[in-house]
Amino acid sequence: MDKFIEIMIGILMVIGLIVVVGVIIGYPTMLLWNWLMPEIFGLTKITFLQAVGLYILSGILIKSGKLSSK
Image 1 (cartoon, helix red, strand yellow):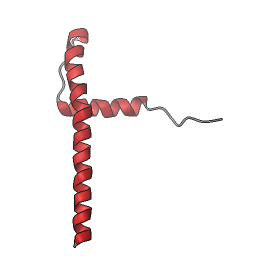
Image 2 (cartoon, rainbow, N blue to C red):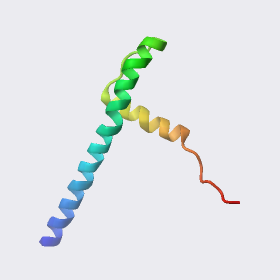
Image 3 (tube, rainbow, N blue to C red):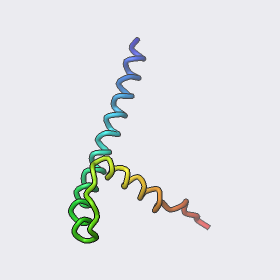
């Protein structure tokens, strides 16, 4: 029973960490987008979830491959 509780606490801590990282990443992205893009390019404002999705998408598109030491 103790092992089960330890596993559940670990899972909850990981979920909490994911939520905190999402807020740390998404909120500044949303604020910057909503501050700059409508004024500069006439684009619409985005929501928090759209900002997180934009951050993930940009990471996928800009991600570089493995660096080779050769």
